[in-house]
Image 1 (cartoon, rainbow, N blue to C red):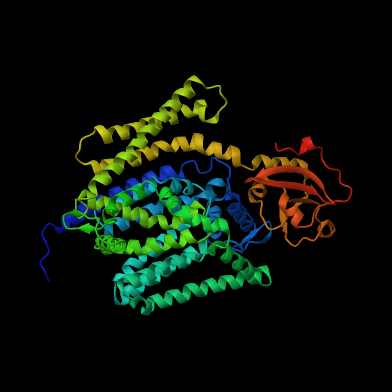
Image 2: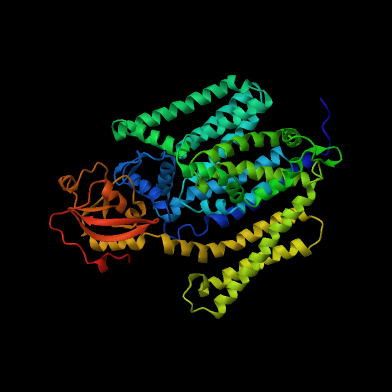
Length: 590
C-alpha cells in the first residue's frame, strides 16, 4: 500500500467544504425559485386533475385507490397522490401550494443530483455547470412550480439511469446493491407516472451493451432480482386496479395508451419526427448550445493537428465518436441520451414536458464540455465555439435586461393602461430583473478575463433569482387570468341549486372545475341517451360539446351554459323533461 500523502486530509477537507458550500447555495436558490409563492395562484392546465385525485383520497382513510369524480382513475399511477395526501395530512390542509410541493422538491433534488454526478464523475465545477444550466432552463423552472407529474418523474428516471453508472462499473456484491438501487428508483418512477421509465433504462443498457460489448450486467443477481421485483409490483398494481375498476377496463385503457403514445400511426405524428429533434435542442437551452459548440469539433472528423474534412461520413462520425468516448462517463451519457432521444422523436407523444426525463444527460454533457474547455483538455478546437456560445447567452441576457428596464419605465409612466404586466406592482420586479440581467451581461463583456467560468455560472444564478419576482407578478397572474376555472366554478354554483349533483358525461374529466366548485361531481361514462341518464338519477350534466353528438345527446336536454376550457367548448345541460333553456345572453362565458 502506498503511503498516504500528508496533504490528503487537508485536500479532502477543502473539497468537502467547497462541495458543501456549493450545495448550500444551490439549495438556497432552488428554495427561492421553486418554493416561494406556490400557493398564491389558482391551478392551470391539468393541475386540477392531480388535485382532485388527492382531494377525493383525503376524504377516505388511509392511502386508497385513486378516483376522479368518484370513478376509478386509470390513466396515471398513484404515487404522486399518495405522497401529496401524506403531506396534506401532515400539515393539516390541502391547497394549491401543497399540491405543488412534490414538483418543487423534485426540481430541487434533480438539480442537486446533477451537481453531485458532475462533481463525482466528471470533475471540478462540471456538476456546478450542469446544475446551473439546468436551473436556468425554462422548462425546469416552469414544471418545478406546477402540480404535475413531470418534474418528479424527471428526477426519478434520471436517478434510475445515474445509479446504473456505478452498477455497471462495480463488481460482486457492491454491483448487486447498486442494481437494487437502480430498480428501486425505476419502480418509484413507474408508480409516479408510468412504466416507460423502464424503457428509458433498458434503451440505455442495450446501447451500452452494444457499444462496450459488455453484457455481464444481464447476469448480475442484483439486476435480475431488482427487475423481477419491479415487474412484480407493476403486475400487482395492475391487477389491483383491475379488481377495483371491474372487468378488463385497465387492460383496454393500457392498450389504448400504448398505441397512442408509442406507435406513430397518424400523419401528424409521423410528420413531427422532422421537427421534434430541433425542438428538443430548443427546450434544453442554454445547455444544448454548449453541447453542440463543444462537440462540433468531431463532426467533420478529428485529425492530428486540428480539423479535417477528409473521409466518408461514416469515417468522420467514427472519429467523432472515438473522440467523445475517450471519457467513459461521456460515453455512458451518450449511450443514455442518443437511443432515448431517437425513441422520443419517433413516439407520437410530443409535449415538451415528456422530454424532461432526458434533460439530465444534456445538462451533464454541457458540464463535461465546459469542464474540458476550462482546462483546455482535448477541446482546443472548440474553445472558441464555447466562448462564442457564452457571449451569445449573455448577449441575450443583455437584451432581455434592457427590455425589462423598458417595461419598468412603461409601468411608471403608463400605469393606467389596464395591462396586468404594466401594473404598478410590476415596477420593482421589472427593474430588479433588468438590472440583474444587464449587470451580468456587462460583467461578461467588460469584466476581467480571469475566473470567467465561475463568474458566468454565478451570474446565471443571480439572474435566475432576480427573475422570480417577474414570475410572481407578471407570468403567473397572466396564466391564471386565461386559465383559472375558479370563476367558471362560481358560475356553475349559481346555476346548479345547492345539494344537486353534477354528472360528468363522456370520457374526459373536468377536474379544476370540480376542485373550485361547491357542488359534487360524479362520472357517468356509459351513456345511451337522455332517458338513460335520467334513470341514473342525473339532472345537471357537464360534457364536451363534441362528445354530446358521440353520446347520442342531440335532443332531449336544455343548454344552461357554454364555456371554454383548453380550447374546447364545454356545455352544462339540464336533462330533466320540460326544462327551460336559459337565454343565449345568460349562456355566455362570464
